[in-house]
Image (cartoon, rainbow, N blue to C red):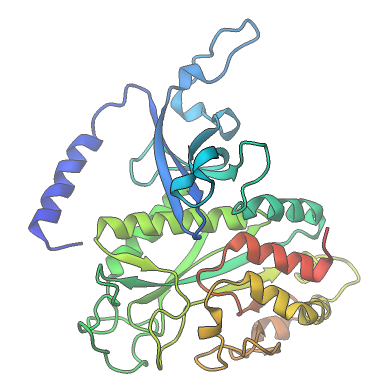
Length: 378
């Protein structure tokens, strides 16, 4: 927690107002992904007693906890201010697609993740969820499960890693990965707050750890099935940015925020199907994994195009990455494009890890291209 007295005073004052009675109204935070691959949001008040009518045309007296996703109304925003629409036709429609308990305002308030749609009824150019969802529906019988490892770097308002000497480098990498203790890790309070917020909201966050570069951290979401993977990761990203805002810190999703002999940041993507998990009679999971990896290889460049901006700065063949120009895989090989965990090879079934996606990659684009590369385009 910040030791700034002014910060503490403001926090205490805010808590006083957050405890006020809402008179059975719901504060809904509508969240969307903008043209730059970041989240934006705005709030609206929802009256549960004005959401649904009965057969006689009278409104049902719903309680706040009875509000479901299908009852939420569409909304809109000024797309010309987010580079998602021209100024002469600027309304972009927000369609709710997922709903989570609000970890900032508490119950009964909600976070509403939305897709962006144009006025003519077509998905917005930056709505990558729409096509991803079609692919997930088409191949749902495969029961695709994903686990994404989101790396990120905490930066000061001067765009320098938090905890680093101003304008200078700390000691070389070595003691920071999964480190414990002052001088090894920084801003653990942000990480802890984010972890708890995700659990409160029902995000299937499976863990966190300090990463190889100081001020760099990671959280993992999964295993999650189908389109829910992208939804939950975007919600978790929103939570982290919002929490870091409270602490006066920036979150960098850039895959190589600091040049030089420092690890970059990725979005390692773990993938399995019912066949790779050994759930299909007559099929050996490891054999299916090898088949799928072979199908991925000819789509290497196609995947790279979907795996985030500035990824060439990270995929150099150094710092636990494979080369951006070459596809490779191996068991327990963190220098390959694809890693098969050693325990998976030993057990003969499980999942594999695609280590190519950058930390700023869109999870909808990542999960979609993985599926289409292995199972075919629609």
